[in-house]
Amino acid sequence: MLKKKFNLAAVGLSAALILGACGSQTESGANAEDKEYDLKMSVTVSDSSTWYEAAEKLKKDIAEESDGRINIELFANEQLSGGDSAKAVESLAKGSIDLTFNSTIIYSVLDDRFGVASAPFLFEGVEEVDPVFNGEGGEMLKDILDEKGVHALGFGQNGFRQLTNNKLEVKTPEDLAGLKIRIPGITMYTDLYRELGADPQTMTFSEVFTALQQGTIDGQENPVDVISSSKLQEVQKYMTMWNYSYDPLVLGMNKELYESMSDEDKELFDRLGKEAAEYQVKIAREKEEKQIADLEAAGMQLYTPTAEELAQFKEASQPIYDKYTDIWGADLLKAFQGE
Image 1 (spheres, rainbow, N blue to C red):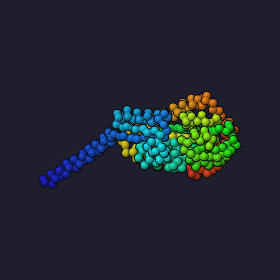
Image 2 (image 1 turned 30 degrees about the vertical axis):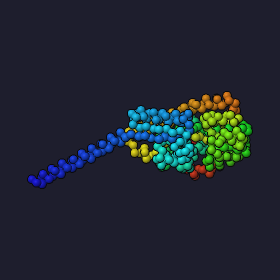
Image 3 (image 1 turned 30 degrees about the horizontal axis):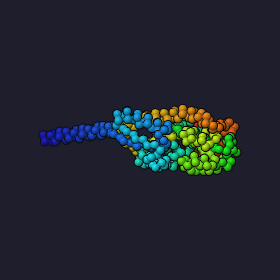
Image 4 (image 1 turned 120 degrees about the horizontal axis):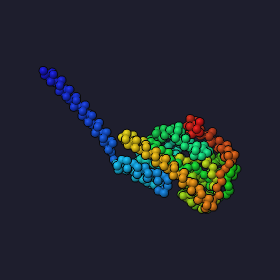
């Protein structure tokens, strides 16, 4: 009888432990789903940019669908990293910044493979870009970001980088001979412009307008949005619309933060982040059409190279592929070439 009572007591104790454990899991799950977040997001450019507008959309949508439980505070002009974009992506990977909108060119500080997305004359236009970023190329880029501690919510665009200068209408590689062109401090671009016969100059973008005005440099390269918003038409006469390098953006989230969230919150960020990135691409492309018209109206002379002229630039750029294919990885390059 004593043994039977003991067995019943043991069963009761086991049941209580099981129920207790289930209760803890339920409580833990509920806490994960109800957790409040105050997140910080860094945006490279100003609060008048399409980047920031998309970040505002993400902030608003997340707050609405979480009933105010998740708040995102936005910081323009890389305020969280003292204006240093490279430091911003490093901070994102480490978790001291929660979300960022940054170019893959900047991500090259974490891994040279990110440079593949901006390889010279890789894409002719946006119609070739979207299938790659929505397909294998984009997935492979997300995997590399994941390795670096960043969860990609979506891809935006800074756009195709165009060339401006004050000397002449650039139609062929020969026209670039000796031109002092300001470029971002990225080795691939330095190598490329030297191959094309130009004299590449690196400097912070904040110095570019004055340098162009004073004739310290002859030209620079940037997407139309940057050229227009920086009023470079006031100090530059010619622009070559050659789409020589595509500049994509990553709407990135710290991977550790993302993985610590409930499944419901993960789904929220994945869905709304993708929508925000797609929204940025849409408004950026719409805005560019008007900006191009405004630049021409301001007196800038725009030139679009012919297919034959572009073929000359591509041929002159081939040494870059010879040098960087092993750095980027042949399989990754093929995915971006649509092969």
